[in-house]
Amino acid sequence: MSFRQDSEIPAHMLDGPVRGQKNMTATPSTDGILARGLAFEYPGRTLWQDLSFTASPGSYTVVVGESGSGKTTLLQSLGSLERPSTGALHVLGQEPAKLRGSAKRDFLRNKVGFSFQNAGVVASWTVKKNLEVGGYQLRDDPEWAREIFQRFSLPFEFINTPVYRLSGGEQQRVGIIRLALRRPPLLLMDEPTAALDDKNAQRVTDFLTEHCKAGGIAVVATHDARVTKHADLTLQL
Image (cartoon, rainbow, N blue to C red; front, side, top):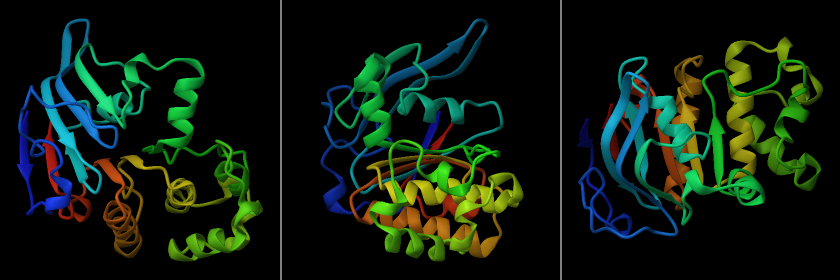
């Protein structure tokens, strides 16, 4: 496991230990991520172990590694969908592995936004129905929705179109638009630019950068140099 700090970290982001350094005396932050000594094991196989890092508000972290190294599993662990085998993990003041019931639903609905490799959309649903998963309602701020569609170069007229009629890149942008509309504090994104050309990939990296400048946190699993070059911290699995 190795870490690379890619750029100078602004002072306002250093309210905990420097990201990428192991500091077992660090205390959990209610605003960021603190991982200490994490491991994830299957019978006969260890994906990663002794993983420690912090991510403060405003930080942009990328996770890189070969296919099968556990990048997606790490994102799912941060978002409470998987449980590390050992170690301590605090995310936005919560311990994801211990969340149950309404507390877990609240965490997933209000704190975390996922973008999955397969875009995380239901092909038989309309774009509108996919965007409103989790309680968001387009009617609450239709002008904001139109602005976000325009920003990601997706015609707003697609709103009632079944997702299966869209291209792979358009489907991926629907998943990202859903995040932009919800505006959760933590973005967990798995290969968000895999199906995108350079122009649309730039729109995604601009979105991530602006999210972090506004005090959000982004953790992105990727093989894409167009994404990694903007990160504050690179986690190599």
